[in-house]
Image (cartoon, rainbow, N blue to C red):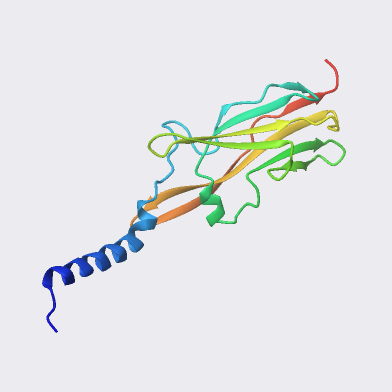
Length: 165
């Protein structure tokens, strides 16, 4: 049987490019980059010091691609809303990203930069007190010949929830 050199070259090229692509795919993914002078989790827009029941708390952070967290299960959630319990001097998780009252928005920017905005729609059932919103994520950076995924978390300043001014 006569073989056609051009046809064989084409198949070899396809096999080689598929093989190369599968090896390089993890390296070709964009890495996450924090803007100069910031680190992942830094607060870009903090919460106000005080909110009433029914209002929306919004905090924006220097973020990273949420897909990185799906690949690395260090944290089980992107966010928590926590209330300070003065009697035990501890923080109690009241809501997470599975709660109807919370929203997580990822804003993809250029050159690997991105922001994460977290909102908490304060429910009528929220008790007055001191709260905080925490952000959990993973950033991808390129190391020699492989991508490394590193966890980070952020705990910005607290805010109070009141029933009346």
